Every structure is written in C-alpha cells, then in structure tokens.
Length: 363
Image (cartoon, rainbow, N blue to C red; front, side, top):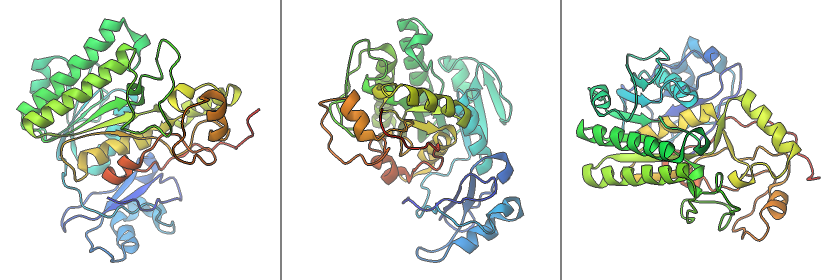
C-alpha cells in the first residue's frame, strides 16, 4: 500500500481508507475514543474515494465531515485477520493494539499475566508456557507477539535472554503448528546493539537501515536477534509470513513530553538510539499493517517518527555526538537518522502522530 493522506479535525487522530474487495467492510471506531478510524472503501484505482470514505465513516465519525483526508492507502490487504492472538496484551503497546483490533472488528484472544479486559477470550500466564499458548491458538489466524522483558536492566542477563527467546519460539512454533499464516513480532531498534551497549559504540553509518551490521553486546539485543532468527525458521519451515517491527522508544504524549525535556536539556541523551521515538498509537497501527499487508517471508523493518525528539538540527547533533560516522543521505532539520523506507514501501506505514517541538539551535 502506498502512502496517502491523514485526517485532521475534531478528536479523530487518524483515518485511513483501504481499497478492498466489495463486501469487506470495517465499522469505524468512535472518533472520541482516540483510536484510529479505519474506513474500508471498495472502489477502483483512480476513482475518487474521499466522499465514499466519509459516507462509510457515517455518523460515528461525524467529525470527518469537513476534514481533509491526508492518509488514503491505495492497495489491497492480502491477509484479513478474523481472530488474532495478542501476547503481552496488558502492556502499553498491547493495550493500544487491542484498541486498533477492536476498531477493525477482529475477534481478539489475549495472553498475559494480567487480564486487561476487552478481549473475546483471555489466557493468563506466560507466553513461554507451551500448553497455555497451544490452547490460546484455537481458531486463531493471526498472531501479534509483544510479550517480552523490554530492557536488559529489568532482570538478570540469563533471565532477560531466556525469557524473551523462549516466549518467541513457543509462540511462533505453536502458531505454525496451529496453521497460522501471519505473525507480527515486536523487535527493537536495540537489535543494533547501540542503545544498551556496555561500552561506547556508534553506528557504521547514517541513516541506520536494515542492512547495517549489528553490534550486539547485551542480552536484550541478543534476544531480539534470536527472535528474528526464529521468525526466519518458521517462515522457511512452515511458510509463515512474519513482520519483525524494530521499534524505537515508544510512548504516549505525556511520556514523550518528559523525554523531550530531557533531550532538550542534554543534547547527547538518546544519541545511542538515534534520538528516535514513535507514538504508541502509530506503533499499534504498524502492528495492524504488518498483519494485513501483501507480503510473504520474513521482514525486519525499522519504524519511527520522521523527526527526532530533540529540538536541535540532526546534522548538528550527529557532528557533535557521533563524530566521524559516515552520513550517506541528507538529514535536514530534525529528521530522524533512521531509514524507514522499507516499512513505508512494504506496509504503507508512515507515522501519523508527530510530537510537536519548537526547533532550537544547538547550544
């Protein structure tokens, strides 16, 4: 799906139109929930879609009536999920994904240590529990695997690595055995080895892309590398399509506001993570697009907001904090030094929620 245009207006945060076969409809969510409004419009390529999208949105998305569409995604979903297992469903990203799936009308099965509510069925426990995961797979056609220890500092090294790798293997292996053909897993920008490196490390070049060699030196980064290798295994063995989303720092607006303050006060803060971020709502949308896009095989993809969380020009930050690192493409303004072109081309993903920051000169 190619990039389109986003809706602004009222409290609807984003709207998309997906061109599908006639009869495939999605009831949009109430725009006052803050959930992305998804509108399915069965039209031919080149046919005007804005009026059709507004009609399909109906009264529940009335605030779209006078708003310009800024994201209209042209293309067809190759995989239409009907029953989705979400591991880590009670987490921050898991909760955002549940809201997106509810807006799509997909039945949701949740798995986590705490039941967040809002699912058709819920399984309480660990994503590394083979019997539990096998039961949760009943009738599932899509898996979004988010359960993990998210930082190397949240457990002993062996605990972080073994927990994350075992959970991913169990979930993908059981999914394959149950006949699931599509999975999305939460990988991380940390797979580069840079954010949690125990010694100074810099990227081989900028912008960072999927071809850049990894510099893994911590158990969390290693677990993400093993997760992506597990995805390659089930794709090769079972023909499952897997999208591994390499997320940067994720957050809601309040969290990002505090992080932006830290980035302003300390220009070097976040240099090991490319000063990157992604709004939680966009991260959830990336999971949905990963679950529905026309693709096969395994695809590790960097996703990020197009700008950094720093108020300072990116090229100045790089010159000061990452001196000597080759810059292969222009980095105008506050543009993030991560190449997200692959996610845009394959998924049609582009962040819709940009944290507003007043630009400033680097002190």
